Image 1 (tube, rainbow, N blue to C red):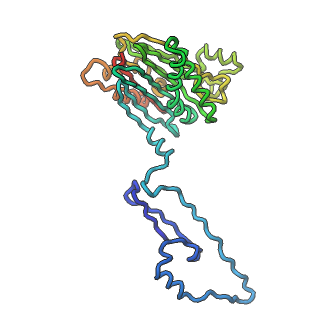
Image 2 (tube, helix red, strand yellow):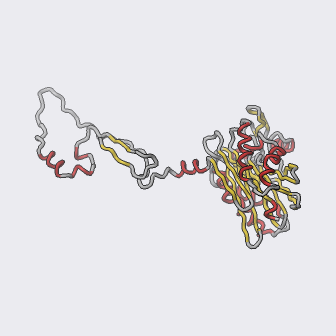
Image 3 (spheres, rainbow, N blue to C red):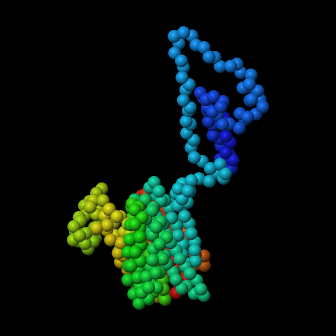
Length: 353
């Protein structure tokens, strides 16, 4: 038996034991085989027998064993990239400039939520973008959208000017959808985004991620979930030749997908559009904070409950802890039986007025 010690392993004692059998010394490329003692042992062995007893069949030399070796990295003990990415997204806490985020993986195989925050400061807040992205069928779509959606919207804004922000956002969503479909990845992603420019709050969504603003402590939803149960969405799908059917008690497009708008979902693209719905609000002094979250929160927590829980951590005291509010909202959803991934982002609007 030959034991290989693995340096820098995360555990205190790690070894990999490999047993070689039915192999001649010549076939074992082990470093000590060239030592003087080993050579002397070989030189003093009796010559192999060449004669056999009559009628005894000649024994064939057994085939060389192929010993499978699991891939591992000896240099630093770092886990494979896929595993490292999965572990990194099990729980994410971010406290940024005017925003806070808490992500928690549910009972799914991989974490499918992602988010994006872009705050550019040059004497004042010039360009602010926030997004929460809830993937389904894997994390590829959410990763792609988190990387590209804000850039595509900014490109449209620069191309078309500031006169029609809603159209620029729409084209940014549609362009991102077209780009993702060329990647030939499965799955899709629901999105909610917020842009703050010139004291205007532009909120858009495609799917069932939601944005709710606290106005003097009152919850005001800025988005409407895109579900097949919505009458206008159901009618749109039927006009396009599709249908809505219940599966496990949930209305689904063609009995399959529980949302009616998303980026991706190539197999259902005839009925699932990436076109967002948008709303513009002038940020007034009563606007306190914005909650943006995936349905891992909203399926278990109402709009007003979310505002009531978060407000003491976001308004009216000397030690504000909005990141703690994000965490408590996710914990509340989990305590009520949510097994879904959950991402909650809180944006303090006073920081950008």
